[in-house]
Length: 318
Ligand code: G3H
Ligand code: 13P
Ligand code: ZN
Image (cartoon, rainbow, N blue to C red; front, side, top):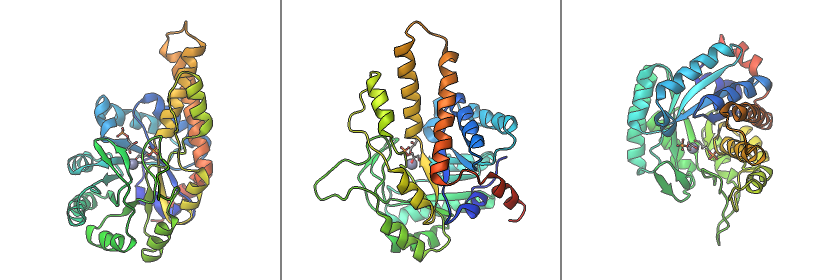
């Protein structure tokens, strides 16, 4: 069942985070639904601009609609990840999405507010909620390359009040991709929880979002490299940090890279071990299983596992 993102945040706030997983194709979608059902977790499906362009957005939307019918017990929200104003407006009009992210964090403060407010006004008129971003994560994000700029908590208050966004992606030291923590002189490695704590105090009850939250498990990287990959010095966010963030008002934790690593490991090992095979279904089957396993494990770690019935019971009460 597709629900609003706000409905999920209401149950999760201060207790656990909801996993927000990016998908691009059928196999990921099937693995995603199976993994969430196995772990009895509510979840968020994220579609990036790149995912919408990969084949055609209508394919992805149709796959998700089909999954909703095939897995009727699931409860999830559909979210546009890292939208610009145009893609946000397109998703708002489509009537399919629960929420959109307007990412104008690379713009100056006033311009970020201005753009976010326009999107929020349009979204609210249609019952969608809006995630915005203040600060900069660093790393690579579609066509934007940048360095880390932590979210300023006092600015966050003004930003939320004026932009009317419903949740805020905060920059606390994470970055996108598989190479998150590069040692640099004078730079503190790890997450800046003090920023989350300050925002929680200044904006009690207001949901925060953590991007760049893949853990890039060492074992996964080692298996990929042992099967011919070249992911040197890959690193991610320790899982215990994500669980901690979930108890501090971070309601949504974005994970994409870890899913890509599962895909890479399964495919590399398969072709190494079965060089004579060429039926794409022979590899799709283990991929869907492994992807589901990864999702279920993430939900356990985030604390969203086991909350499906509670969310279902809460739905009529909003
Ligand atoms: O934050 C970005 C997500 O990992 C989506 O990646 O834009 O390459 O689909 P993408
Ligand atoms: P990762 O690259 O750490 O998986 O982050 C994904 C993300 O933030 C999607 O918006
Ligand atoms: Zn992101």
